[in-house]
Length: 203
Image (cartoon, rainbow, N blue to C red; front, side):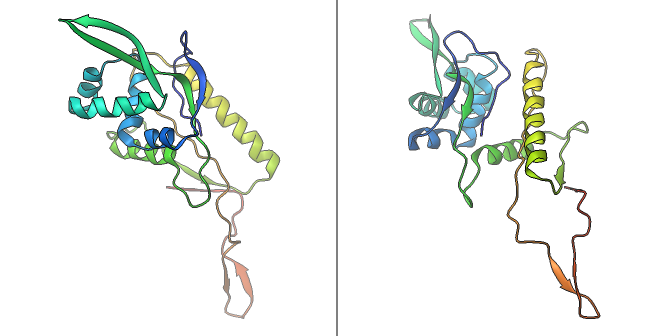
């Protein structure tokens, strides 16, 4: 899983950081810290600025920022003195964050954060939410996966800093398949409940 930002890699910023340790995974397995990372992708910010923009208490903002810094997800990119106090500006250490795929039955951190953001988003008639089912082979699956990734890259490249935020979350996967549901017909024969294999749209 790779949460991505729209920015091109800045000087001294890695293209991808892979999170593997328990400390790193705990750091990103938190909705507030997920939103801090997203905020910092728009540009460096201080703890006070993070608190103001996300509606946090300064102490809470400081705690979450420190957790992310210790995990190596964000870092101080510049400092300045304000009335004798040093202000630290934080930014992500990488353009992308790569998380290990969860095991079967384990929570998917990225999708849970995306769903929480979707549910918290204001109503917007332009918003697109769709679930599509299809039956396809391995070659077609790989083809669509590549096209989805290319589209996400295209969206990132089209980002304009002065415009409003937009999020695109993709989960393209093969669900657990217990086989087609079957039921007895009146004459005792079995038939498939699922007769449309060309794909169906849901909510």
